[in-house]
Image (cartoon, rainbow, N blue to C red):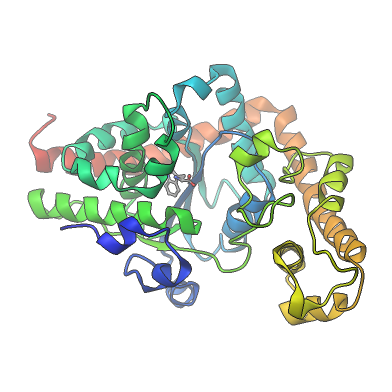
Amino acid sequence: MEPNPDAASSDAASSDVERSEAVLSEAELSAAAGARPRVFSGVQPSGDLHLGTYLGALRQWALHQDERDNIFCVVDLHALTVPEDVDPRTLRAKSREVAALYLASGIDPETNIVFVQSHVREHTELTWLLNCTTPLGWLYRMTQFKSKSEGRESVSTGLLDYPVLQAADILLYDTDVVPVGEDQVQHVELTRDIAQRFNHLFGEVFRLPKAVVPKSGARVMGFDDPEVKMSKSYARVRDRHAVHLLDDDARIKKTVMSAVTDSGRELRFEHAGPGVRNLLGILQSLTDEPMDAVQARFEGKGYGDLKKAVLEAILETLRPIRARYREYAADPAELDAVLARGADRAREQAARTVARARSALGVGT
Ligand code: TRP
């Protein structure tokens, strides 16, 4: 099975994404909700979580948690691929912070499985087994590998192998659906290719997953530069790029009020540039109002009014999340217990899949 060459070379423009057989539309997913699809997703504990991750991931996960059989993972092993950037104490703290933010966003650790990737060793074990059936060429083709390795003098084997670890994450749990941003669709396609090749060579061991890319909140752009997607790496070097979930009110205010808008004085939606559209999109997403209602409300108003409304909506959303986060942060033993239980539940399933793969390959007892 060769991976789809178009998907491998494109930047996953949305039209390609919709055409790919690896992608399920949100409508198809809702239609299948009666069957409680198995969902796996994860966020890397590198840097601070921002509004983009909240709107594109955490909030969506929490919103649909009752219809799906969910596993939400803090993928700390994925944060090791650039060793120069790894500070062990920070990484450990960030993994717990991200887990606490999952819970603070309303994800219920009883009905969903919430855990830290490295607590379940099957992830690393399956990665090796999959490495041996993954052609190297498939990994060199990954857009993310190309952009992350560009200009670096030395690149770790882990950076190249990153998508195989991600494939292991997904395949370990017989996942049906992987909610991800557009930039990760290529990794889900690769996961399918890896699974298919393994199944073809050694028998039906893995279920083929599909990606689902949320429409609303999927693309939150930088406040300082609405041409680029809000990202942790930009946020690290640019002060006014992102609102982080744990920022205080004053800082959020500074970021939002300094957001790039258009050169005119008042808002004409017809002529709105990317900065204004980003603010409207964020507001729409936070308030769940229809877009035309949001547009109508601000048509002809000054940009300051729009920014103030966005600021209010952000503060209102983040305040309770921060408060719940602080409760978890104040009780580390409770968070440990939640994560230990999540890892136990995850391990039980992961171990079954690894046993199938080992047996198919003729290794193990
Ligand atoms: N690579 C994903 C990202 O950068 C994170 C991730 C790792 C992931 N394993 C996963 C996402 C499994 C979905 C499923 O966003």
